[in-house]
Length: 97
Image (cartoon, rainbow, N blue to C red):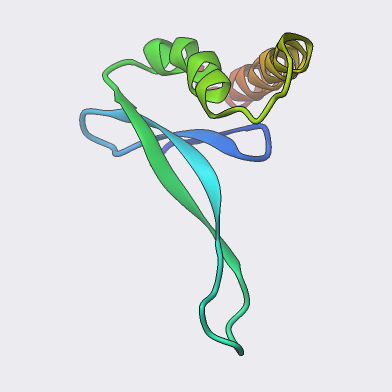
């Protein structure tokens, strides 16, 4: 399975057959005293092509953002752009892209 980590809370994966998925890292709060909280990856979108998933990621992040102003959202999206660039360059170096 292909896993492309993009930023701390997002990644793109493949099911190995037909789809690429954008996944978001979510905190799962424990309801039991002795069990710690944990993080899980949850699918937030399915895409037929890797490029389509990459192009959709900024919209996914913007819709889920907790930014309080346009300036905060713009900064968040600029950081995401850098994270995507680093991830894609890592793929090129590994021979995948």
